[in-house]
Image (cartoon, rainbow, N blue to C red; front, side):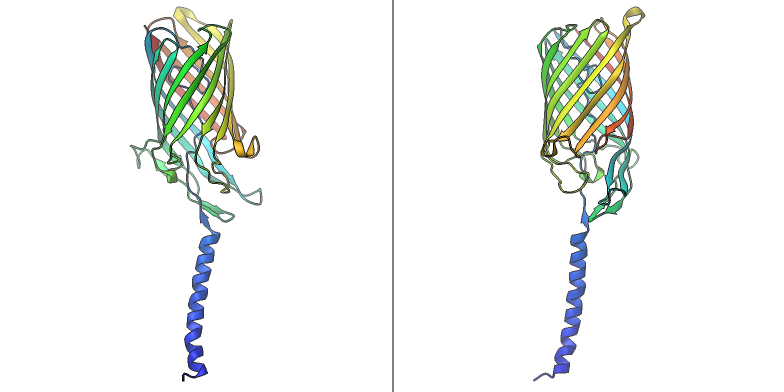
Length: 320
């Protein structure tokens, strides 16, 4: 029979190995890796929609359409706050993008496609509470062919005519996944949007608004700063028209837009942005041109509502 000392000599190394393994498993459980997702919340209107986010519902004529190119830069679109409420980590501190879109219109209907391409997505990695955040490092040089979640949509003007005091419409979008979650440019799953639209003209004053639902299957709760399922969308814009020579006009005014998760309605999962916009456009011919510029910041910061952003775009549009 083995002696007590012999048994003890065999048991202690085994216990030591089990202790090391347990500490390793506990550490792995305590430090969880946060996954990425589509940070961008700048959900643009369809090509030819007039405003950056709102839609003027100025759809008319026989066969027509628009092509657009929009680009921009935003600062701190994803800042995570630690459990102590003081420590902050800018997981995504810079983001720049290019969005190419095209639409086809007929009568009061529009179909369109938007292809967004990230040009720069960078940030700072770190640990907050039990979660480890790995920042993206996507640049045009390292990933020149990256495409983020694209959108196919249809809109319809249901009430009113172009130029009327009140126009009502509705729209739907299919969001199809592209890109990597780790780059914070994609949810890696299909989604959609349903929007109720309103717009109108009152002399030199123009306005537009929207209410909608973002059908977002991704729910990463309770990871701080992550998506929490379906969201309610809202927004409003208004501006004044300043007429110029040869059919040119300037429209200047603010856009306010945002979203909130349904499960925590208008609480900590809400992001709201204000954007001061101006656009120079020439209309009244078969081939029209619109140049847009917007500068804004977050009124209520959540992921995607950037600390500040600048956007600019060009649209060619018209109809027969």
